[in-house]
Image (cartoon, rainbow, N blue to C red; front, side, top):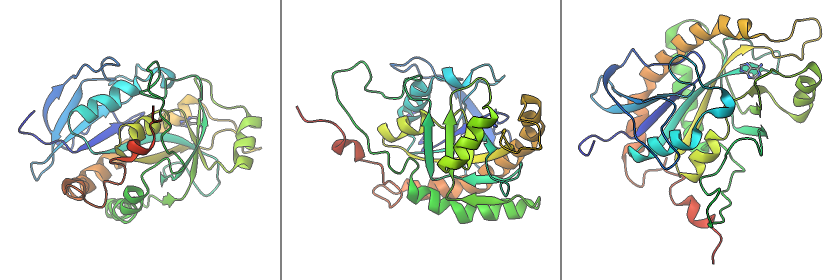
Length: 283
Ligand code: ADE
């Protein structure tokens, strides 16, 4: 790997198990102090020849439950390749009428309903006491930068896919979907989207000082609409394939430019680098 820079990692969620519109180069499977990643990482070449790393969060055949995704190994493995920024994709339910299934969203806030269940820090079990800043859980510069690029990629695809920004995602513990009462409560809390996978990934990316943005892809209306049936896995599956095709198109369209943006050392986009220096309690 020494001669190959892989500055950008892409994490695929439900339905997005490969980037087969890029040129596959090889698989690598780094063992980390937290074990192996969800799958061997696919190194893929962009048309320009630049290399990116792709990791399927739930495994290639979707065999890994959201609660047991080895997020520490995933983020650590990407970091070990030299990755500076992670573009993550995830299927989400919509808690807002205007965010219809098929919509794409770049959220900027998270409500954590997985706390205490999933290992969420690289420092757990160590004697280092660290409190990472997480008021802005996604990397704002990266997210803002992405908005016009993702919008253009969606417009170019010509399927009339809507893009939303400034939305709040609730990350819940599955495997069951929410009750109607919970779904209504999340709306009252200010939640716009719901999924099972944004965390602890975003927290760990912050601890690893990686820039991290989530492209959420809506599959359903969860359980809050009074006259509609509540979400089923079958409903989620219906939209997954089309959303995954559009995600692949978006990734292939913007990855070269993302790479350039993160390539310059000290560049504007590297806002997370050095952030943990302020997060570790002095002894
Ligand atoms: N992923 C996709 N749709 C979802 C929903 N309604 N709740 C939780 N996770 C989801």
